[in-house]
Structure formats: structure tokens, C-alpha cells
Image (cartoon, rainbow, N blue to C red; front, side, top):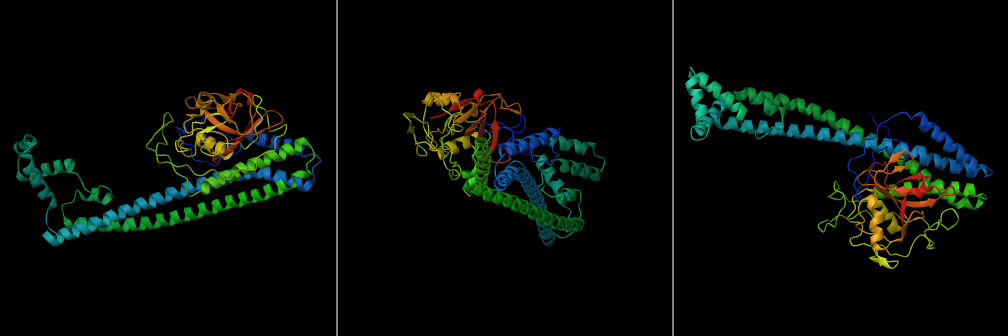
Amino acid sequence: MTRQVRPIVGLMLASAMFCAGGVAVVAAPAPQAHAVSMSEYQAKVSNHAKLKSQLAGVSSDLADTILQLADLNDNQIPAAVEAAESAQQAAEQAQSLAEATTQRLQAAQQDKANLEEQIKQTGSDYDDAKAAVAQLARESFHGSSTSDVLDFVTDSTTADDFVNKMQSQAAVTRSESNAATDAANELNTSMNRKDRLGAIEQKITQLKEQADQQAASAQQAASEASTKQTALQKLRDEGTVKREKLESQKSQLTTQSAKEAADIVAMKSQIDSWNNQYNNSNNAAVNPNNNQQQSRPNNNTNYNPAPAPAPAPAPTPNNNNSGGAGGMNYAVPGNCPAGSGYCYGHNTGNTVGGAAYPSRQCTLWAYLRRSQLSLPVGSYMGNGADWANTARGLGYLVNNTPHVGAAMVFARGQSVGGHWTADWQYGHVAVVERVNADGSVLISEGGTGFATFPAWETISNAGAYQYVHY
């Protein structure tokens, strides 16, 4: 059954996204074009209506800016991301096919050169098959195949019969040095060098035509991928402009509901901006142990994660986003320099920076974001579900109260808001970006099940999870 990919950036593929010590064991499925389901359409309509109601009384210009930015966040940019990724995959596949055909062409050309050299040395009428049979016979009489050869001799009625049987045996046992081309396989059955040369030349002609066609297709696919990427970047640039405009006009908002709506829309846009920065970084590296969960330190790793995106402005504490955690009163960002081994009166567990966390995984993002906010975070916190227990062991405050900057821990197999389930083996971890007035939390998160790194979503039942604070 084809899995539909939700058009909202942060929404997780149902039961498909999971995070180990940063590792998603199953890669996310390739993006596929699909019609929006009725439930998705109704959800979009409902969200739009809710946002409009929150903006009641706001000037039409500012309200339009917020609504347009929300549409970019929730609809246009996610759709463009999906289209760009699909086009990029198509371009890579076309290029790979073209390269494979070119290699086959080069192999056939080498076959031709080798055969032409053989013809120069021993002539075009030299019978390579009989020479191979003779060599096989000589080797067989001095090895474990002697009995087989003797069977051929005693069972053969004529010399030609013997040669034919030996040729059949040679065809089965002979190892070809260049099995990469169809030409090599076809030519094994020909004993006439002239015929073989003609067949190779014919194959070369066919491969040249095929290679030219595939190269043109690859170029076209690459052009289409570039066009899609350009369209995506244009939307993101538009989002940046609207976000900056919104930030400059926030003082005009007088109601709490309008302020919260504007903050949420702006934060979603900021998270997508971080994703864009991450993807554009030339320093992004891939962990060589990308298919292993994090369980213990690996002193052999040379992996260095991409630098954290530029920090967002620290949110101003208020009743909506400074939700207390066990009475603590720290602001975001915190007071721990990046890479700190000891902070807030305890060992942070930060020994190798983010080097232990695989690329694009939830644990890597949690590490990067906490470091960005100058909050303590360790190098070996384990798989997503392990962060709470690991943190307790190191002396962090862990409870069930969300706070901006806290690492939000999803237990193994935990149902999340009814629309996805944390992986049964690894769980998940995210970072709280905002505690909303209704008690829900806006989070940023990583993981290969998401279209972007980081992604975002709003979780309603916030009290059901554990939070790692300081």
C-alpha cells in the first residue's frame, strides 16, 4: 500500500519516523505526489478559520501578512520541498543510469581494442575457443578434474565430439574478466574473431546511442531539479521577508490571541529557515555508523556535525512561553557555553560535542538546538527515549512540565496526539520552542521521517511527556 506523505512539514509519517541514538532504522520513503485527503483538507480549513478568528480586530495588512506566512509555512513550502526532493531523486537516478551505460560503452570499447590487438598478433582466424579447450584439458589432466576429462574422452565417439563437449564445459566454468558488458557475454559463444569484432562494433554503436539519450535525459532531469529548487528558495525568501515584516509590526497587536498566533507563525517560519541554513552548509557530514543506534562512546569516530544554525532571538518570558519547571526561573538562552562539560552544578556529559550523533537524526538536532540556546546537553544521551534517564543520572532536572528549550522525551511506542507513534525500539526526542496558552507545545525536531531538518509540529497533550531542563 502506498504511504501518503503529509504536506505539513512537521507532521510525522504515521508509524514510519523513528529515531535511535539518532538513527532512523528505516529510511523515509521517497516523496510521492498525492491528492490531499478529505481529513487533511478539513484540518487545513479548520486551522485557517482558527487563525483568522485569533486575528479579529487586527489591521487587514498585518492580518494578511500573518495569514500569508502561515500558508507558506503549512502549505506552499512543504509542497515545494516535496517537489524539489522528488525532482532531485529523479535527476540522481537518471545520472546514475547514464553513468552505468557510459561504463558499459567504455568496457565494450576496451573489448574491441583488446581483440584488435589479438588479431594483430595471431590473426583473425585464430580459434580462441579451441585454444581455451586445449588449455582446460591440459590443466584437467593434472588436477582434480581428470576423471571428468576422461569421461569426456571415453564417452566421445569422435574428436569433434570431444572438442564440443570440452567447449560446453569451458562455457560453464570459464570466468570472464569483463562481465560488465552484454557484448562480453554474447561473444563467448563465437569462435570467429571477425564475427566477434563485428558484434562488438555493433554493440558499441548501440551503447553510444543509448548513452547519448540517457545523458540528455539526465541533463533535462537536472535542469528540472534546479528549477524546483529555485522555486522552493523563492518561497523561502518570501517567507523571510514576511517574517521580518511581521516582527517589525508585532507591537501593533493588542490581544493575547493575536500575539500568540503571530508568535507561532513566526516561529514555524524560523524553524524552516534553520532547515534551509543546515542544508546549505558545506560542512554537513555523515556519521559512518549511521545505521547503528547510539549505545556507548566510539573513540574511532571522526564525524563532525554541521554547525548549529544562527540562534533565534531569545523569547521574552511571559505567561505563554515561560512555563515554570519545578520552580526554576532561568531564561532562554541559558548560561552554558557550547561544549560545556560542567554546568548548572552538574556534569553535562558533553565529551565529544555532537560527534556521536548521526546526521539528520532527532538526537543530533536536540544536541544542536540545546547548544544553540546555551543549555547543557551531553554527547552520549542515548536513543531518543533514553534522554530522560541519562539526564537524571547526570544531575539534570527532569519532570513532566514543558519549558522553552527543554528536551521533550517520547517513550518507546508512545502515542503522540493520536496522529503518530514513537518508535517501539528507539523512541524520539525534540526541543520545546513555545508553550502555548492552551497548554500545547510547539516543538522543533529532527529525524529522517521528516521532509526537513529540523521540522516542527504542535503537540497538545504536553503533560504526557518527560522534559529535560538544566
